[in-house]
Image (cartoon, rainbow, N blue to C red; front, top):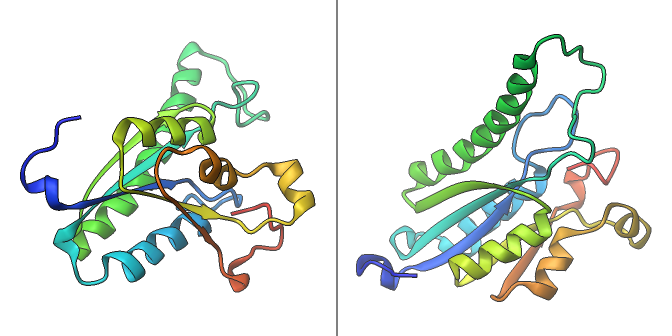
Length: 180
């Protein structure tokens, strides 16, 4: 990967971000927002020109390809609308983080990939070669980790760069801790 001269002296931090899983809450997840705010407050601080944040959102393909099982599909275009809606939601998510970076004055890039989040994050970290990967962590207990799995643990073990996993604060845990 070729780096331009001005970018050669910046620290590149990749943040894996996702949407909230709470129904009716089309925003960045609690863990993603927490990881972003932690990165700004604890690493970037006031040295905004010394960093570039790289935002990756991975859209996991639905197991059966459908998100809304109670929806009626009468025309071929109905399926295109569903695909477009998922892409639009991902764009809104990235728009939130890019807008925040511009407000603060931190350089950034953002992109969307599709696949198994843990695999794609590690593959993109290898491709982009960031100095650091920051991921949110829901703070699940042992039983919940077995059922829900954890992307952050996988990234800590398999990413080819240093990884910081930011656990959400206890007061931020929704009624169902698997939600984010």
